[in-house]
Image (cartoon, rainbow, N blue to C red; front, top):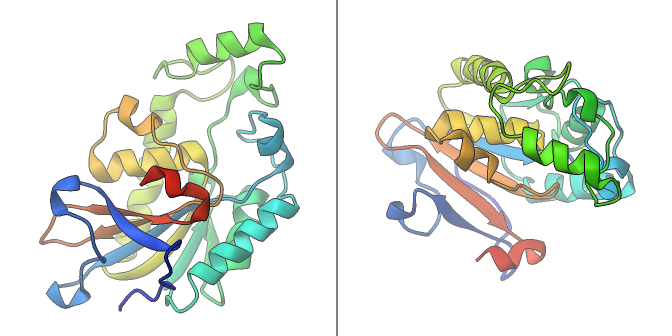
Length: 234
């Protein structure tokens, strides 16, 4: 299977990790069986726009989010997906439904966003500095369950186990996972052996698409699609 992304000056792929492999097109499948995992984040919700912590709260896509999902579908047009996976939360599931183009869709609770406990629904836009300060102090403690929520270690084990189950179903071909900010960080942590600090430093916007390539002969490779919105990342 070959990639069929539209190639324009503002829409191309570059190699993101590891840098030693250099930039260029994804590896040809002729060298062996390759599993390509397209990793997307759900489209925008009103809570994203308001900078509210969503977590397990089941918020819906807004009009911008649906437009982002439609653009993602266009970018993946021509790529034959063997399966699409989402979380059970509607913002992820609805994004996947817009994109899947007939590919089977499976929603997995193991891909749900982190439960933020007492901080669910709280704004992190500076309007509540006391709560925001506490959140920023506690959010990266790997054992902090955030008063009834989920610790980062618990999140990682959940996502790692779920992702392992997905991988066991696909030795080659192409799949799409539509996740969330933190769940996608944990997937990248599992694939590339990242530390928690490195994984949580990754910032994937609602309209950004990553491509993970896995095969038995090479280290895992990560690509990122560059569009007009994220040209500054080059």
